Length: 238
Image (cartoon, helix red, strand yellow):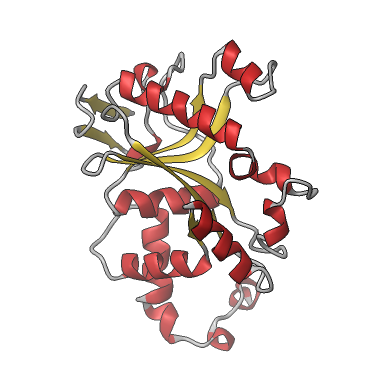
């Protein structure tokens, strides 16, 4: 059961639920969806990033669908495209700042590479908002209209593009970082994630998966044991 209270003012968003994931709650007026609910299935990496942003004071929404018009779809060269979906949208009402976050965990892969941001590369399509300026501007314009018209942000917010990733290829790290700095994008890599989780481990109790796990690994007894001292589930049953 979920209790939701939403003010029409952008700086007042109050949500309460038994799952304690207020960033997963939305309403019909908020984003134009025909139903309101709590996301039942969400990418685990996106959840960690969303919870970090929520702890840092952002209003956070995952799997945000942007309702592009027919004219806008034609403008971006995708006339039959469904609603465009964004991994995470985070809003800071004090600064009237919207951060659009693309999430790539890539934990067991080569990681994000510099070539991913070259238009002629095979992997460029994985980073559409970064590699297509027309698409980016069109989606951001419609997003700000949706949120401001529904009272979820003030008019004319500043919009920033961010990439949260669990791994960057070491040979590409400096090139990727240089590209993001040149474009004015935010790069949240594994070091960013570790530093935020370390801070969360030192905070008071929060009933969120990322906060609980960070306390277990970084502050609790598990942090004081060597990997060899941790018995596997199979060894526990012997």
